[in-house]
Amino acid sequence: MAASQSEIAQRVVESILAQKLLPGERLGEQELADLFGVRRTLVREALMLLQARGFVEVRPRKGWYVVEPSVEQARDAFAARRIVEAGILREAGRPMQSALRKLRQHVEQEKAAIAGADPATRAFLLADFHMCLADCLGQKLLRDVLRDLTARTMLAATLYQSSHDASESCAQHAAILAALEQGDLDLASQRMLDHIGNVQEGLQPAAAPAADRLRQTLAPLAPGRA
Image 1 (cartoon, helix red, strand yellow):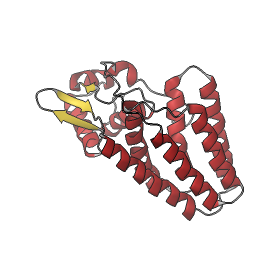
Image 2 (tube, one colour):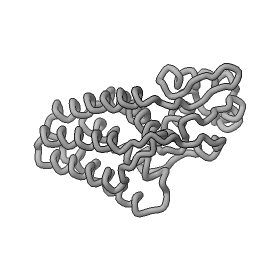
Image 3 (cartoon, one colour):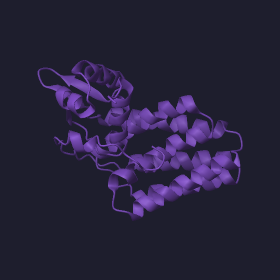
Image 4 (cartoon, one colour):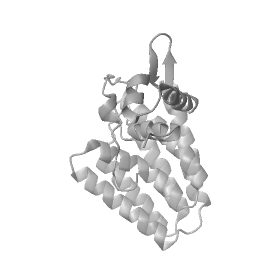
């Protein structure tokens, strides 16, 4: 079955979250149309949707490209994430056991991915923890907002070569979860602020090269909760 406009856009965002699709990478309309088995018109509509969300841009006489966020844009995205994620935690009621169990399972999946050899699944799961957290706390609208903000910061992390270690991120996720299990929402919020701040501080100003790897980078992911 041919993909829809939203499915094409979702695949692109998921590939950004997995750090498979790089800043500055070209998105050819015909190549995407062939990949998803749709008309170029539908691809163009999906790319326009992604442009409105801040993920792609049109370069005159060159085509569509994944955006390369500036330092200022990266700073804004991290600031927005701090506001949204800390607010979600501060305003949450005590999570139900089912929500805590789901978050524990997610952290265990992160640990397994870190021990494995698939960097795309590892990157996706570490990013997806934040959407999973919002979802478990009943913030479905903010979950969608947070997905876009997290993808923007992932582009920055790719572009500016984050030195923040994957195992360190996983440990910080586990610490946030531990505070939730204790019912200490203020501590969970502070740990989230520290975590996002640590990731931002790990960025280094070194650009990552773009490559024409569209077919490989947009392959479907199956990380468990995608």
